[in-house]
Length: 102
Image 1 (tube, rainbow, N blue to C red):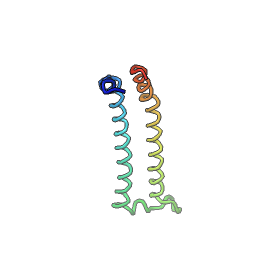
Image 2: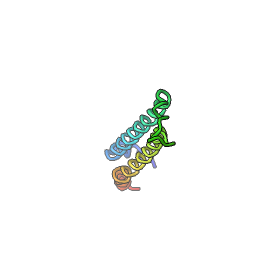
Image 3: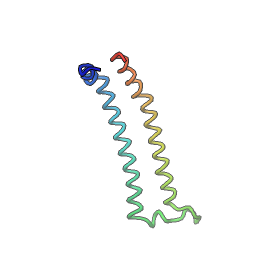
Image 4: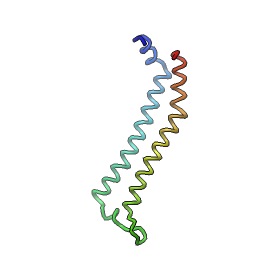
């Protein structure tokens, strides 16, 4: 590919839209994961008693439930990323490939 071809692709409105949408999706999901993860770490650091409380008098604690919630949340974010990529970003990428002749 020549530098002129690359410049033409960079100036393509579909490419600009693809980059913006991907960045928005990536940063929003990253921010959500960081808030959940560091929220959990801060909860462990500043309120360990809350996490140590037993659920209904058994051996399972609130901390275990919250930890499982963090893991499930990360799986959900992965699912959101895959779904959004397959439904929005991939068709835009395919359109861009066709327009640029690849």
